[in-house]
Image (tube, rainbow, N blue to C red; front, side, top):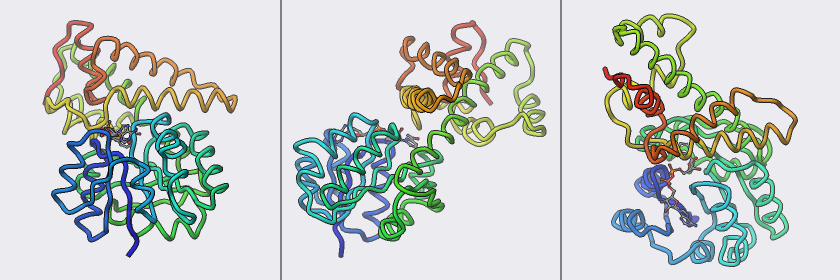
Length: 297
Ligand code: NAD
């Protein structure tokens, strides 16, 4: 049986690795923070001492790290996967990163006789907990076939978007809409609160027209509108994604003025120390600023 490495056991990686372990895969895990490792260790996963240690023991390695810098370190560094893995190693990056990082690690892997699949994740952290994630996959047909059983253990919906890099680019398009929706919802509900409107009635009206969106309809009732602003997906990560989106858009000559404005709304939230809160809390940030009662169902 293939040994599966897993690096990055945070809000997303921990439940995803847990689902792999519980569904019978042989796992070796690593995180710079020992807490997640201990939890996986208790479930029977082997605990590695470093990314290099994971590489030496694995046939396929999944990474679920904060961003481009961490992924490049774990894959390309001296103590990383490519320098320490064997030929044929398959690296599956599920983090959200700059697509140029994906291109760089894919090229370095090819040069070493290894390969990369990008498989960024859609839906919420609560879906990851339940093994109901959605994957946007980029990679060759053979590599896609190799990773499919593991993705099926962590999710319910798997899209093969094209060659390596296509998953990450699809993810940026998707997250542009998801992250900007939060800022739009924040402004709309702050105005509704200031008007003194009934929140239930306002939402009922919005959900009956084309004004609604998935954040407002599905995500928010379980998070900020229920008074829960613990992540989930943090304002820091939403800001990171908008920065990736703007960088990619500028690089490709696509003007995205709304993305730029929304990114700076997230910058203001971070400056006011809301960065570690769930991104649905963008409405609380705005209400705080404008001295408006926070919307709660
Ligand atoms: P997180 O910050 O909770 O987890 C990241 C983990 O990586 C932490 O446990 C951290 O200790 C570990 N880490 C950092 N640097 C490391 C290194 N060099 N070596 C080993 N471990 C290291 O973040 P998260 O919410 O789990 O998100 C992970 C990725 O998934 C991000 O790219 C994010 O954009 C993406 N994502 C998150 C969500 C969500 O809802 N949280 C949804 C989809 C995609």
